[in-house]
Length: 496
Image 1 (cartoon, rainbow, N blue to C red):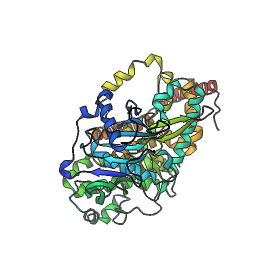
Image 2: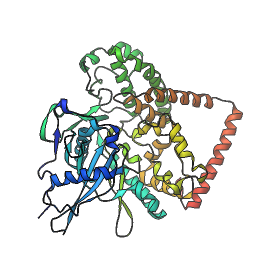
Image 3: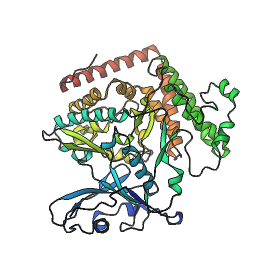
Image 4: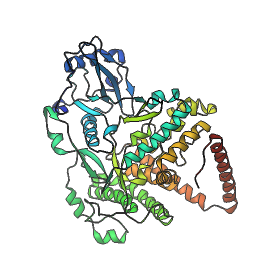
């Protein structure tokens, strides 16, 4: 007898009435595996009553960036075969439906469909055996890179890095005409009932995200734009492009427009004018950045490429890897897609430094005790991933790490490498991460203040005396020689 899935025709979701929505506390999320295992088994018995649950296998939780997952093997009554599933628990329970809808949206993109977990069932209530909102997914073969990396040979790690570079190119091959973020459609948010189809997402332009608390009309905000003032201030924003991006926008226009839209919204909403105390100085610096890099040819004057970006791929915790018959690693899936977005290409290029600085093999032994100290003292530790990107990046500590990074760089391509390591573009990415946020945390204004301080520090440094510049040049030449020596030891050949 075959094992039944929760729905043979279409994925489904249980959506509560508004009064039934719950927000379990942190203790519910951090429940031990011993406590949660019988609850998961009860869910399995409800979905697969004819399975042989004496043979049901439930593995301990796997930790991802914003979720836990529990692999489950369901065995046929005769024990002849089994199917593999995953019970997925999000950290932010209010985003359960959004997580499911995002996976549905990503699975509809042909280029990345095979990398996306298939959602079979969603329950965003606590009226279930787990007493916690959850998703049931079809399991993707493979294991997290974070759990297998140290056991891989150096050759496998280098091959994995090249595979990661190709996966980046595959994701970024998905293009759109405008940049934006996904959000649940209003119809699905209001749709209450049992066993409804999975909710849907729509791509909304950055700066005009449909906040749930919104009590104003975007048309009114658009009409409040004073065209003459905009032209005098050198703004990209006009009434015609406030709601719709102008076809053929450049990278410069795409980056500036997100700031200007949000600033205009805050001017209309007097209660949000305080944000502009941070955004307006940030916009001034971003204008300096794009003008400088446009003159240098980094920001071309031609139409900007808008591509898919999934920040979760930055973390080895979120990437699944399997091995073929020859032992070569193959990336089989990415478990997190919650923050997927469409952005100008240069904004989708933070380097995945965790893959060449991850694990004991790639750490500097002299700094082995520094990780825990830095983590406890870092006031921004809870901020979203883009804030963690450094101006100069985390460079490999040894030859093994250099080999891994070089393999990734060669596979991902020159356009990515330029955008990843150009300091001004790193600044632009970090500014964009704050401006694009739907709502601000306390770390957001702090990040803008820190960025402004770093930017002005770099400007002062660039205008310092000739003697200091010569000393810095000597240091950079030493660094370049050291890197070249490491590359030669690693057997890498630098491209001209």
